[in-house]
Length: 160
Image (cartoon, rainbow, N blue to C red; front, side):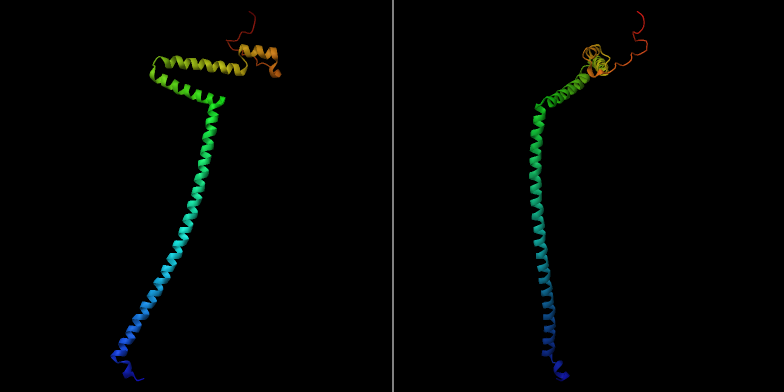
């Protein structure tokens, strides 16, 4: 082959066409490879999403069951003595707040009455109330010794 034949316009056109065909073929193969990679990625992603959706559905169902169980337990506790007592205490506390806000003369008297009731309970719990002392002397509840009387101004120790 002589160099003369390589410079013929037909051969140059054919070479240039084959070169463009090679570039087009490489681009086509690269695009096909990318498309296959995207399809694999999409399949993996959809599998992961479906697994996560299934797990979320299971968790949601479990939480619904727990919610229903807790609702039933709460209703049962509200019906029992302690639950009803707690509920009544809450009602009374809210009513007290409303009365303090709405009745101006009620608040001081109520606070004094609450303080006296609290002091009585403290006395009863510590064994200084008369009924508790009488019962402990009669029945010997726990054989506990009574607390020593206060030596303050209000005590009634000494000759009468």
